[in-house]
Image (cartoon, rainbow, N blue to C red):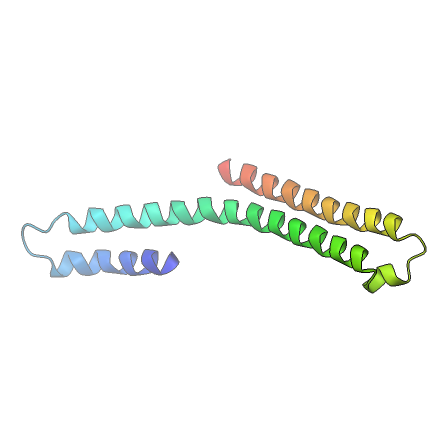
Length: 112
């Protein structure tokens, strides 16, 4: 996305020099492209951060479940595998909650 912004931004002064009559619309269109591209990048970056955190939580919980069922990894030597599983899941959920608080804080700061 930033490649589009860079090229369009560099093309504005160039278009002013090279453009003949009838092509006055080039610079405003390039400016529009820059603003839209920067806005889209900002929107999708935020939603991507949240999606990545949720995906990380899902994968972590799924992995823990598989380890518990197989009795592998730390579950092979755990005194109480189900208690260990609950503690592990709580850690993953807490990390997700922390990531969402950070995400929300950044989203609020960027709108101020």
